[in-house]
Image (cartoon, rainbow, N blue to C red; front, side, top):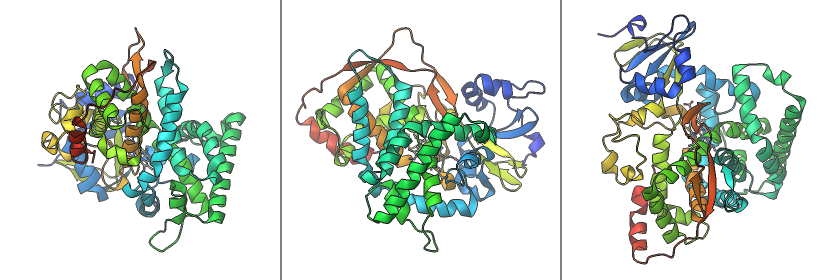
Length: 464
Ligand code: HEM
């Protein structure tokens, strides 16, 4: 028998009037993680409004993939378009299908190899900037690095040099303003003039780069060239305005995830000597202190597993969809036009789907066999289906490059007395604060025959 919306149980921990707002504000990760102990689908009251929370992988998969036509993007995600324009990360339906088709070629696996040189250059800049014993603000550094990875992939020609430099300075502001204007429409009008002037300058530089690339007409092998060449089903290309907006949109969508991932990897390496030693052994053996090329990346299976495992343990804390009609979700009936949340963080730390989930164990991904039991809806760091992250492989690649370049040259040690705990920030999970001490390291010489066994297992273990 199916349940009606009112018979769907209310999540535990509601207050009178405010409902679950206090729990969600005080400890969102704890609230979402404990809900699964009590059932598969809940009503969650946020003051006067009600949303739903799906905690079972099967329901999450139904919503994102099998019955995705019954759901659309959540209202919150659409908010970014208020400030920037109708960008890929904010639109839905036919507009989304068209824009996704136009943006896709720039993120295909074959194309990603063109970005490796820019990625290693960005990571090398970071590694070059530290001095022995320096206390590094890892969160700030990882965010800057993640922004640099995107800007270098976008503009590989001198024609985009000013735009790249501008975007590296103001990229974080775009993200902040887009988030704020999603919460408070009209915010742009009250922004301080300096911020407006900076964003205006970046916007003008991007427009100039787009115009220069168009006039030049050559393919520079970068993301901007791909965007200018892409065609929709009718053979139309993107307008200059659309290209400009999508570039700004990549700063909104593409910085936080990889930055959080990089922070957590360095934090975890400092906690687990065995994992750190395996990483160092692989880097020293394959790279021996050299900067990696695209051809090296498949030869770093342990580094890849480490990145994938960090993404399991530290994915975003919340995703959501909106019902477009009355829908059935598992045994439950949901009304039209309501938000249904799910939590990658809770799903990917649930002991029913992952053995010893609190442990960061890169080797759980060693063979398909060891993760065969994980249901599809319990591995959702990039969501699934229509609105799945377009930058998934880009993100994995940039993080592997960042870790390979930095960990070849530096160990990051914890600052004594600092307590690091996860906090929800926008949709990501960051450390509350992460300062670490940079300690130089020299790669150990390769040990010989082991090198062959590393290369043999490389392709089998690459993240999918
Ligand atoms: C670890 C890193 C990342 C994580 C965890 C992540 C996560 C996600 C998730 C969960 C979504 C789906 C949002 C939804 O359900 O509405 C998404 C969408 C998106 N992401 Fe990522 N992302 C990451 C990196 C990146 C990067 C590096 C880029 C760009 C260079 C990027 C660009 C986008 C875009 C454009 C979308 C919208 C896709 C669409 O609607 O078709 N992401 N991301």
